[in-house]
Length: 426
Image 1 (tube, rainbow, N blue to C red):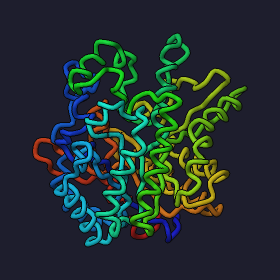
Image 2: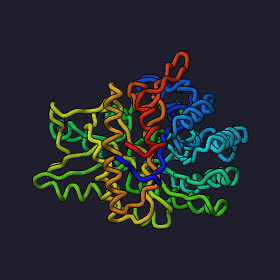
Image 3: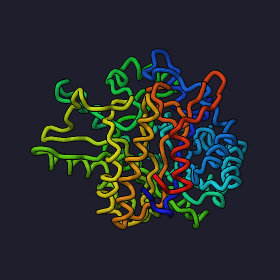
Image 4: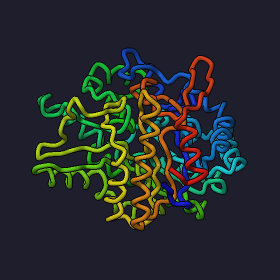
């Protein structure tokens, strides 16, 4: 089967998940505090900070045409108002490496991790957050804008609201919510928000417990608004200094499928996840869609998966067709380009990953045939990496990494997707 010759295919990572030693970030502190709810610390990551030249070159040789990665705010601005020029130059070298290898960079300015100093003023619930984020984004765009064709300001900007809903569901009787799905490596245990743990974090961050509001935490209604304000201010700041850069953000979106009475629940969930953000995105150049699975919903919410359903390592239903369904629904309200900024499967058997890619791209081609503007598809992820609170247990990667030697071993799926990128044949 042929796919559209204009579809640019790449893979994705994020800084904290692959670089290693992100010691000025909030995530680093949360991973390393005593009795952390993170199953293990990120440590040296998979040393992409030093090995990015070989990783990017390997992608290019295999046929990939684009790479989505993130710039780490905690590296660039390790102290409030103090920018590290050496780190800016590091990311300049990464962008030049992409250019050298004819790889189009799509760069995320915030992918979950933040500078630890942000927690002292209330993190992602702070009224200062939008302006502070815009200052950081403007600095990066001033320095690197000529090398930035695409910028995603915030990764999965709706994630904080999704986490809030997840944790509220955990307050219900267990039988009502034993299949709550979220598209991030999160230990959904209310224990992490208990007083003792928060007090430990307060000591580590040297601030009040109530100030500790990392991106991967529950948003208040105001917190959700602040994320959008941060995005809009960042978009304006980037455009002021780098007008040619295309700016958008990414959203975590599920394929909601109603059964017997679930239609109104699905519509409410879709409004929360997507539609209510549309006014804030009106001036964006593109939207990044991130999808991994579906949710089947009745009048009471998500239906628990039966034991005979095939699942991936995080417990998601193995359902690649979700991507095409989500894009079709997004396109009813969004009439600008849609970039697939994440889609993938953490599986034990790489043959399943190949099958996932084949079925997902088949659905995506149907969307293109229907006239939807989809310029890029990024598989998550390039490398087996650190999946947040779940640690290194989930293998989404096209490339396996021996974390003792850092040796890379490309999987068959890496070559399969690279061949599609070159030949546009599934």
